[in-house]
Image 1 (cartoon, rainbow, N blue to C red):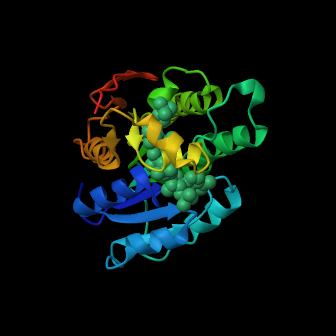
Image 2: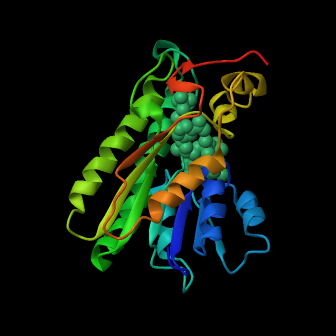
Length: 252
Ligand code: NDP
Ligand code: 8X3
């Protein structure tokens, strides 16, 4: 990755996205850090005003995304690498008792949001004949587990979009990749369980989950392969995971 490349990371206010911002900065890139919580992004930017641009936007809102990304200050484009990371799970209940608003949040963020951002960034990449889109999927997109039907469906959709996008841009010089994490300790479970810290902690009980920085390392590795190499997809597990819900919990 040459210095002065511009990377857009969505979901940069927390977890994997924030770790990706930091990892790309180490590579010498300048990073557009996008999320809804502007105060978090301002913290991330503090002391790095030349290399981090905070952009407050809700990926679910197509007009908001378009306004934010077409109104970038001079020098903060074109976007060389897009990391479509913003996403969430809401709830772990059976589908028959789920809150339909949770379905909407997951589908609107994980699927429509990824499309909204890609729809703004991809045409320019194709026109320039260069660029790299890295979508954050999940092991949950490769299999389904009880209480995860809709979240898993959104991540399966991400996998289909990644593959289809790669076919659509074939021959243009644009790369499309996907990174699928297993269990990563971030705010993900806290969000999923609506702030219930005990339920969130139980997800990682008795095993050492991945850290957000482990995934950021992989994302940067994917982004820094030679020009003729595309990493199509990568699945990353912690040591004690072998699938969704298939974890070894060791007594502490
Ligand atoms: P976090 O909850 O720590 O981070 C999620 C990020 O997404 C936050 O920065 C949040 O920012 C942003 N986000 C959520 N909704 C929106 C929205 N509508 N518009 C803009 N930004 C939004 O979770 P993770 O870091 O773990 O999750 C990152 C990605 O990794 C997600 O796509 C998740 O599905 C995926 N993943 C996570 C795994 C894990 O075990 N943690 C495993 C596999 C995949 P803000 O609230 O400020 O908008
Ligand atoms: C998050 C991983 O297994 O909690 O995508 O669904 S899991």
